[in-house]
Image 1 (cartoon, rainbow, N blue to C red):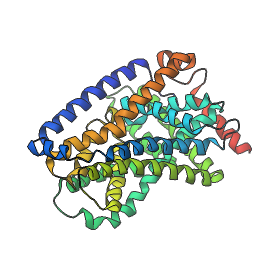
Image 2: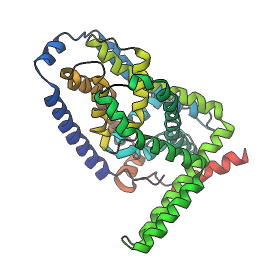
Image 3: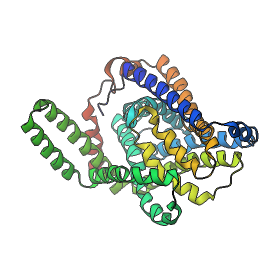
Image 4: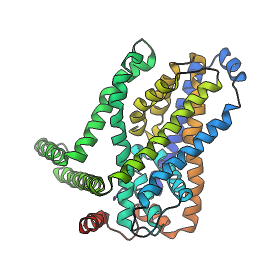
Length: 371
């Protein structure tokens, strides 16, 4: 993929993630905490914690099963479930400190390649894993129609949905056009480049370099997706269902927190609301989604509980959904790093897949066409 994941990038991103998350979480707690917070916290039903922990664990096994499902179609080796979950957790740490998940591409592809899988296959699976959630987000359209009546009112979350709905729709439409009509993206990009060249605000050679890089990535995403759609659509469906199961486990964590505080939301609308919220989190532009994640779930919890519990509920949710998996992924990544010279080279020196050119994805195109 040619996306750098260097040591300095990880260090700076991790520092930004910690400081920003801490500042935002402290701010939310100061804003929401009062005397009722401690009373309600004392009444929390701690018997729900094992359920929350179970959901947090099973979520990563569901996500790992998406890798297992895709790897079963590889030419050399299958990836075991434990290993697949391990790979996803390691990628989670990288995704927590590099915005918009870009850092996970090289990491996932390299770790899959270590399982005796062809590098082209590993990279194709990594790309497909990034595409499938975007396609799943298209389900938000019928969910939004069905839940229109539930969004009536003057609550904070309703206003929040109104604010972010347009950019979320734009993101989804952009990805769909990229996959189905890549030439339109290229034409638009070329027009922007020509316009930028006329105003000469930035050196045109740099713009052309960016254009070439974007064209390359668009081509690869589109080609990989269509190859799998034509020849392995059943596998894609099964993998997408496992990813949906992983997302749903995340959503039940928030619902279980509500149960713990004694609130009984209607499960189906609560799940539907979180499906609508997921693209906001998936495309968060800050390290680890800091700020975006917290305020999104402040909105969710505001629908069911008093203000005094927003902060502590978001803290519990963030801990089990994000922070603990990131810590676990960091432990796994450190162990892998200490025993794997190739991974050291990728992170400390090259910032890309070792001993391979970024155009290696073309191999999978040739392999599939020849089948």
